[in-house]
Length: 257
Length: 256
Image (cartoon, rainbow over all chains, first blue to last red; front, side, top):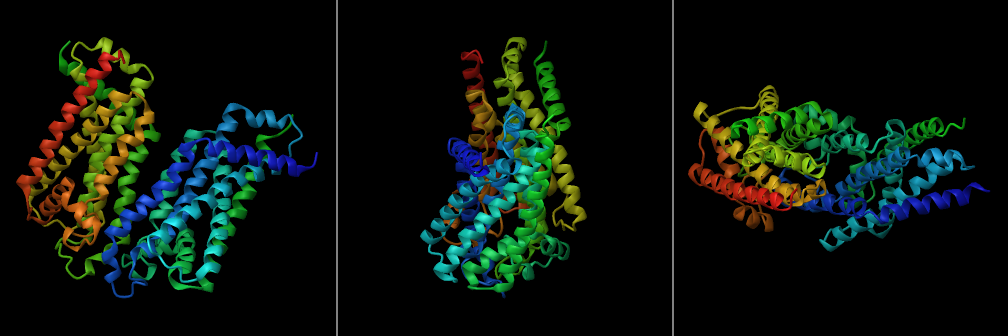
């Protein structure tokens, strides 16, 4: 049997399983938008600060749900895969001719599909709220592509955690840790306007800042090559490292004896 | 067996669970610290906005919000424990064993308060180390912490009432989302006068706005509407107390 039907079968299972769990679909759509709406209203006054790059905080904040939604993808991918480990599904798969990489690719396909659905939803909310995309339709297309790459990278991270920890509860307990990366970033303020030195340093060292800024640049600036290169670069590095770690952990989990 | 025996027994067990289980303790402790760090660190430039007038500074401005938030969520998270206990059948055994069943609810409430004391102590130390300025005196600070205690009671009695009705942890989003919304529909980042649009209207109607403003006023040494804030907090506390005890009656009627 070729590997691609195996990928297709696992991907279909991953997508259907996600679609059948409202708790996996609805929170990643609603929570980031709710947080953005509240923050955009409460922080509108910050656009009065000298040097703030736009006069609409909603446009500034619209980048955040894309990355926050991807964090949810990490948790979802990890929790689903951990459940497969806990219930012995992975062990049963180890008895079949399924290739390790086919399982990983199939599993991540479901995460990417959910990531794209999320991105379309956030875009629709943004456009309905009157946000103009400075980069135009091509920027919107690039944004959707970037959202899928981010979902893939974070999904691989979640898969690695699941395969290493092997427990859904442990994955859920990692949520606050992932949230730190979101909060200690440029999510609410441009880095050059953060005046607490240690926070500015932490936000500068945090790859999530560059991911947010890549999305933000497409929305409020237009085409900013540096921001896009940094955003794509960090996302790809996280993705490649996570996939390598997840593959290694999967090989250990699926050792045929 | 006296009521206090029930209260202290339930409180001790709940507190021990909350403080020794990292999966329960860490979110309670870490989320307020994240919020404080992110808001006080990342948004401090907001003090430069024309019309922002809070002499102790932005760190103190955010400390009060996060203190009240931690108080509310310590109560809500204790409500999760009630739901878990009833879902797993422990609640039924508690109802059978306790001669004074009101002591069960009061025990959980005491645990919620003690749990918050731990969080509040760490948060206060972190804020002071981070350079928070305090304009108020000892009486003002006592006022601030009593106000936060009342918010803790409200948070617990709200979520505990729901937990006793639903008796499943699946009700968790219903317990925390309204609290989250009430907290964030208050003037979190800037004073009420600087809010614009729909959030300004919502915040003006939100009772937590007055509690928050008074709390910030205590820290600055000039609480704007102390009587109204305490009146609102006590009034909500009584309403949610009633809600929780009616929930206990429902749990009793259902045989838990």
